[in-house]
Image 1: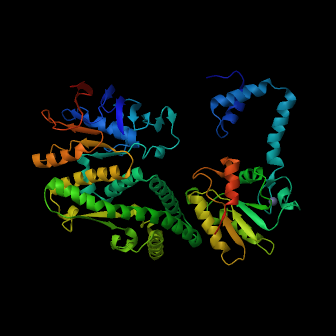
Image 2: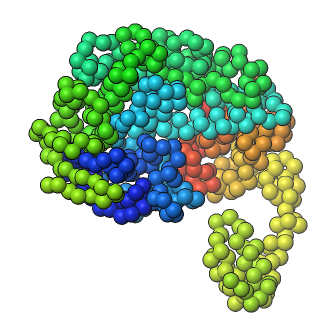
Image 3: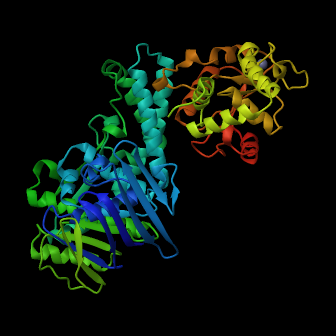
Length: 375
Length: 198
Ligand SMILES: [Zn+2]
């Protein structure tokens, strides 16, 4: 899959811009704050109707403008289509595929798979658990439509249950069914996440070792709020979704008093975490700055390889300022991955950066929200 | 914007309060009625008044009716062994339209929904359980497959535990998130046929 053309209107510092891309590597050079990352952000927005820079979409609207309007032409092996996203300051956003408005934004997810690697990713490794949950949820949603559907059902059940815990009178037979509903939908989420980590961690280790040129071990453990402090990965070997559901329900029964007191659902996949281990130690607690950064990049490259292997098309690879802080050896290792990637977008402040590659390559430079293509 | 007639403006305002009617459609409807003969408009206004004066709820099945019990509950040709449980009265219409089901109905008047403050006591669940005397052999839950629907089904199934009545739910042939009301007839027919025992 590739994006051949992009149009931006009132997106970040672009008043209006049109660009055409090549099918290989698109290298966007510019000083900080000139708008090179915004191109990646816009492409990501078209693929997933969200930003990787912010949770508040309206911050991507150009200063004092009412909305942004962006459009891209996508080409897969069999068809071509246009995706347009309009985001209003007050009225929210809408997505049109070939001029037809989607009823639900979630219909978009998975149609145009993409993986972004950016300096913010270090938050996945060292930030709060919410960052890791978001990362895993977006990755799984792009690969399995049913995961996103389950996740939305779980969130609905969670909202309903929280409303009940917050109401003045709580009938226990009523809370019982919302316990079951939460456990039923939540167990599917937990199960998928554990299965993913099991098959993914080996790949992450492989990529980490290649970038770091070292023999470090990488492991991932799913730490679930439904199992106290226990690590879940162990008991899924024998376990099924039904078993997770049973443990979930036991935890809810056990913690009911506390949840009623706090008026909040305290257990479930919305409270879970993934522990990333480097050489058997939590990287979040013991990792050096360099190790955190390498891990952040390794996670995304491994995610790309994982998705490319499981999907019929190679995801778009968006690399925001990834090379700047790496030494020469690590850059070379990363470049090897690009040879087998599909379409790649790469930003850097480094003017003299040239590539030795078999792929087609197009250079852009950007200055104050305007483009100059350089052959 | 200024209207030259206050009555017209009032009518347009009232129309635009209705679901899925915008300002433009409201205006079109109002001007359409203005052109109709007086008798036709009076027939419409009487029909509107009647829905509040004559229509009530059936004390057995809680469907909308002008007589109590309703014609579905009193029709001797209808099977008394099965009760089909639905969320709202318009779901009864949807199922009657496929002309395949010949049993009784029970309208819950909503689904469990804590966000809207709806709990078991706000639904006609107790009344359903009271109907499960000797005659009834099967309860079919024709309830939309969403989170609230699932919770309501679980609640009813829990309460029917120990009552010797078969309980089934219509198959999930209906697209997730869409309403029974909008399901096409073939889908609904297949869903009724393919119900699963709980
Ligand atoms: Zn009746």
